[in-house]
Image (cartoon, rainbow, N blue to C red):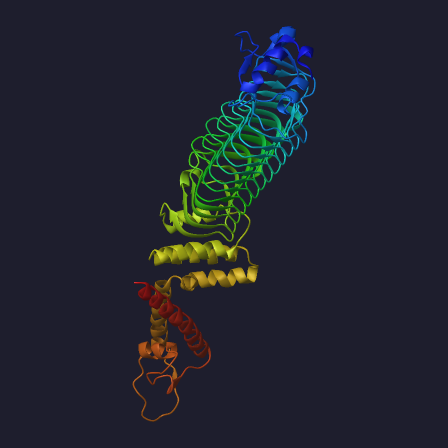
Length: 537
């Protein structure tokens, strides 16, 4: 390309390149809007001129750092640097492109496209030795960064991406060694894709707005972030946030975020791994299912002050979650089911005022509960599981009470377990269970068994006082005493010598057998229960 073939603005850029000087064609007007239609030749630069400069058409001035630095220009034609090796920086500010630039599989120095308007940007597989700075730009038709490697910062603060029928941002397997900024009003109309991407610093979506109603707003499965992830400070998303299998080396913040996907899952964080804490709190709201099924949170998962709800089904799934602490204290009761089945949580904090109407607890394991409610209050919590009787939630709660030394509360829970199991059994077993509860409280009320035992002794003493049993021989027999005779019938081992010389007949014999059988059952039950209570003391 010859210099005499260049227009005046192109010649200014050509002459400024060797020294890396900036060329401003805006005339002091930084706005990029409808006025573009009135930009004439004095603000127009052909893309082929930029390509020629970036690929070494002009030698740099000695001791100077060359570069393309252009503001307020209209770029015509195709800026095609596919597979090119560019060793100088490219910095365009407030420029408008007629065609989408193509940087695919190029090796670039720092690229700055600030406050520009582009009909798309194709940078698949691009290697950028420095920063990719897109702050304030508007990209219509999709931004492609799949497979790209950026050694510095990816800055998309205030960027507006629109491709409603497709991918607004395609960044599958992208690698960024430093931070990624999608904040300060970052807006995407269409799907934002980050599956398999790796970020060496922080990923910041603060104040971002994602719009893909009925679809996936953010697809970040298997995303790997070395530090923190911020989706807070006014973050909103219409459509599903899919972070399944993602890994976060710091903490994940959804503080105050607003998520909406009424027809399905608002936040899919299944199998997520977070090295510290997750905050879905302080005004966080989700219209749709929030799922942390199979996730691993080394610290706390906080849902303090959250608003969760679905029209029907599961509103919050913590199934198989592993966490040190879960703070489930939303601002209002969860609308829908909370699934805690098979979760493993060291400390579970909740609030009776905001318990959901329906909760799934089978397999739920925990070490401590806060607040420390009594057994009758916690049984109301257990009874919100409407999936049917399952023994494990009762056993887990009873163990928690016994660990705290509250054996009476533990027995209350186990008694409720037996009662609720009886409700799920057939008529015959229900009758037997009812009898067990009346007589011995299923073995968890030892003093009830002792009371029945005392009553049985009184009954036998009175009965045999009036109906002496028949003496077995006419020799010298010990004096008959109805009280000790009844005790002799009840004793499982040993005797006081009356049952060997006195034998009832007829109906009295059946009464004696009944007293012996009931006495054996009640005696063992009372002894076992009292021994268990004393051992706890």
